[in-house]
Image (cartoon, rainbow, N blue to C red):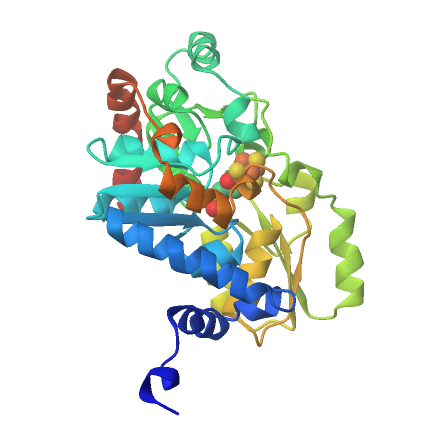
Amino acid sequence: MDAERLMASPLEEEITRLTALGLHRRCAEGALADTAALTLEINRLKKARKAVVCAHVYQTPDIILGIGDLVGDSYKLADDCRRTGAEEIIFCGVHFMAETAKILNPSRKVFVPSSNAGCSLSEGITAADVRKLRREHPGCPVVTYINTSAEVKAESDCIVTSANAEKILKEMYRRHQAVIFVPDRFMGANLARTLGKTPGRDIFLWNSTCVVHERFRPELIDVYRKRHPGLVALAHAECPSELIAAVDFMGGTGDMMRYVESTDAAAYLLVTECGFGELAKLRFPKKNFIAMCRLCPYMKSITLQSVLALLRDPAPQEVLVPAAIAARAKVAIDRMFELAAA
Ligand code: 13P
Ligand code: SF4
């Protein structure tokens, strides 16, 4: 056999790389080669464009592990984007995350590989709604979940994510009697309970919900506890309060992943979007997970094929934020970074 034939082709090498990451376990027979052909070409084009791929943990593992450069929850991705030296940011996440990246990186081009990557929370509130809340509750600061549009952020005093909302709200209460928290009513109620605050008196909420997390029922916790002795139940802070009252841990996806990493439970029930469970299984193959099978239709509108299509014709998918809106939104986002780090 000559030396040339002994050398693996780029496609074979890519298949080996994806196999080492465990991706073969989620592919049907023969399908890994198709995935590898896509990741190979995406990574080649990405390098040529000096682009970086941000991937939220609700994306599919072929995106996160196959092409993701920056991976994490919405806080980590926003923070990482501030430091990237890349010329372009391809955001495999939802539109508000890409908008945040654009606000933080006005000189870089930011793209989302889907025109359907919205978010029910973000779509449930407008800038006019925030202005009305301010008029109704004069003197109360507006603390806004990052799952909102740039226009809503521009009307806000401080942005929070699931990773820092509790810490930042505590600081707000050190300075103010009452706070307006938008738009997630479940997250707001869950945080109010943790902080001993009363909705309608010292925290004023909006009525938006996440279409994925609002549908988890508290009864499911008991069902799985009976089936799996020693089970630890973790739920995202966007879940309804009755469910949160029944679990062992509430947090954002970053907190949940760190909790799994640092503990050794007999089994983990992961009450959140199913991409999180898929990733946890690949990262910790020896741990036992019961992951929910509920897809975020917005997150899942992004595929390797749509990323490749974007790299071949990016212009229509560019995320733009008017400069005046971006400047005001950035003040509220920077406030988050400042208070989260304090
Ligand atoms: P995390 O910041 O916790 O990843 O949450 C983002 C999100 O959209 C959850 O539904
Ligand atoms: Fe929005 Fe819910 Fe999807 Fe997160 S999971 S992006 S909050 S719709």
